[in-house]
Every structure is written in structure tokens, then in C-alpha cells.
Length: 313
Image (cartoon, rainbow, N blue to C red):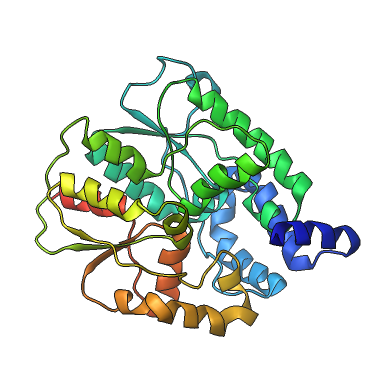
């Protein structure tokens, strides 16, 4: 409903500068990614400038760099070309550009479980365009991205999305827009099936792990906590999955200056107590981890990162 309203409204009104800048960032994110080696030294300044222009704060101050040799080429997307234990990661533009930590943690965690990891070249999925009512822009990006996923599916290998909100958009919004996609799994969905197929290595960790799910993920996939419990349980680990609401980030909402008091209050409702506990805590969503760091000073890692750490001991 909000997307339809925005699309109709901006047929008759000029878009705010902040919206246009964020939409441009998404559209040209592949070009930005290609220039990361040159942009990285000046990005902290560019981030401050972007915050001033969009009336936002706490925008990411560093660009991510994908490890060399892990990005797939077009000639790799053929049956039998990649090892059978390969997992293909479909990147969303924001994680690809700004969350290098989760990329490294995911690579390490999946390798510790015996998988080879390769990344599809990053293409924007159109999430920003869709949320701001740019229907035509969304369809252009979605068409290119769906064609890339179809090409990846010809390998017969599993495709995984690391960011829950991105995965849910592919399932829900792409389907509504008429785009047929191959299955794109969240890590816990794929690994929970693998638990029944093979033995996972065992880890030694006495205290329970607290796992916090992204609110979009928990709503659209209510069994997400149980899936993670199954995965960690296969390694001999106990997991608690308390219910939480929105962390208060909600995409760009939590960055905009006018929303700061409400964003902080939302975090206080159900997230702060978990951040201030001494439990080993992980969170599945980029927004959740970033928001926790902003307002509590403690940033939980990704579940795959914890798996890598525990299996390396």
C-alpha cells in the first residue's frame, strides 16, 4: 500500500533530494563497487557529506572489499564447472558495499562446515526503488537480477542470500511483480536440510547462544529460530531464540535525523536488554547489528561468524 501511494504521489510531485540520492546510490552501486580501491580512502568524508545532504546520521563510514578470487565469472555459471560442495552467495547491494564483516564471517563459517563459497557479481535488487515508489526503476533492476539468478541456477548449486530482508524481498515482492526466481535460501534453511544429510563438526561451548532474528525474517519465516536451533544443535550447541520486535533501524528510517528519538525507543523496547546481557549473542540482520552498535556500543556478530569461531577452537 505504501509503495503504491509513493508511486502515485511522485507522479505528481518532485522527489526530495534525499530520496533521489539514495535511489542513485542503489542504481549505481555496481560502479561504486568497482571503484572501491579508489573510493575507500575518501569514503569517510563522502559518508559525512552524504549524511548532510540526506539529513541522516551514522551512515556507514567504510567500504567493504570482497576477498580476491571468490567472485564468479560468466563462464563459471555452467553445470559441472564448480565443485559440488559450492554455495553461491547472491549479494544485496548494501551488504556488498558496507558489511565486509558479514562477508568474511560467512565465508569462514561455511568453510568450517565444509563448503566452498563463491559470490555472484553484485547487482542491485531494487529494494530502495521499490520502497520509494519508483516502480519502473525497480522493474529494470529486478529484471536484470532475476536473469542473473536464473543463470546461477543452471549450475544446479544452492543459492544463498545472507541478508534476511533481501531474501524476503525476493520471495514476496518479486513474486508480486511477476518475476519467477529459482529458490534462494537463507543460511539456516539450507543448513537445516544439510543436518539431515551429513554430520556436522562438533564445537565446545558450554553456555547457550542467544540468537536474535531480523523482524522481517521472523514475521515471514516464523520457524527461523527453530532452524537455527537445529543447525547449532547438530554441532552440540544450545541456542535460545527470544522474541524481539523491530530494532528501530528499519532501513533508512533509523538513519534519518528526525527519527532518532523513535529509533532509540524502538531499540529500548526489546533489544537493549539483550545487548546489555553477558550472553554470547548473534543477530541475523545487518540493520539489527548496526543499530545495536549505534545505541549500545555492543555489536553482535553473525551466526556464521560464531560458527567459524567455535569450530576453530
